[in-house]
Length: 584
Image (cartoon, rainbow, N blue to C red):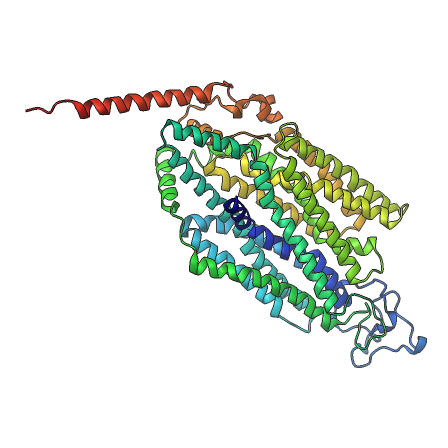
């Protein structure tokens, strides 16, 4: 049990750091909004209008002489009259780039480090991914510039570098998981019948709780988001920025101290740096190269020599419908999931207008706690045969579409108090976390054979981040109500994708995939008649197109009996040769 817990924690470290830095970007934006109002809040009414420095930017700027207010002559441009200088202004393209540069980096890391992992090994690749994460965080913490537009341009580069390293963690961790499974498979071939029986019972037990185990690892993302929210709230509180103070000396038009807020978010990322640095040291000094790396390379070379381009073309084509299910649903879900997370700050500023930084981030913390509850609720029910993966995902997408649509309509028409809209928003996130957010990850991890699992999971994850990148670009140009409308539409499309292309593999052993793949490579796919051909484990698309073989409930036991018979005959023959008299 202790070893199981340690393995779960180790596997979830990447998810934890990913959530701490990337998912909390929406909360960091609330800090930037208060520290750089001329950059992140132009054309918005300010909480402290008499702290506005220049004219021509904020709608509630006082007129000169009103209550003694005058523009700051040492700061404002004399021509045109008393406007803010260019170095304090930002373009929408630059502020938006902070978000989508992260996902561009993640997507690049998934592809490039996935390739490097097979070329230079797991240890070298792990060191490189950690280096990029450290480099990105160091730049985000220590780079400063008085020109705001240039400041966020450079920060976007550092965000991309961090994302590049995070993206490499996906194929790296998937490859390590596949290799540990490969060791277990090779060991099983050397077992006797009683040992294989025990191993089979253990495999069945693992299959019965596989969805729960994978979901708990994935829930580390929720733990990272909650931890990040708590850290940021603590920094805001101890930095004396929890309330709006218009009369405090040095506070800007939002009622906050810019220097204090600068220390808040830089300290936040420095704590993230302290999480990644030990990982880099561990991989550089302690960890060793995977023992199975050479075996995997030899196996790939042998397979390439025997089957040519079959592995690269026909096999991927064979799994294309299932890739549409895992990658398509992940793409559609991440449009809403990451889009809402990254824009959680602006969303809560609309739902809670005039709220202080502490209140806004407290609401986001509650959102992250509710999301975490949903993660663990999904883990608790995902392995129940009466529910399974597909039903849970479809029901989740259905609830999300209804709740997001209702939230958008109420917000757009202003016919309900803000607390009602906020509750609906919370319920929609709970529905998504207790379903689609977990199932898209779990199904991509269990739908493919061992030697394709990391590749296809990486493709599916890449598609998800493509959806997140699309959301960060599109959502920056639409209203908050339309963000909810778009997520409602994508939820409906994802429900249809799930119904057509997704397969439910609840309690199905992953070894079934390996058996099917081997027979396919031998040119005898019709000989596979295991549980993957059973009607309840097929997608609707596979049923409609007859894209499957026959199912024989006794196929696996008959194959095992045949294997035992061949093994026994070989052993008898070997014993006879050993006992036969030697020639004089």
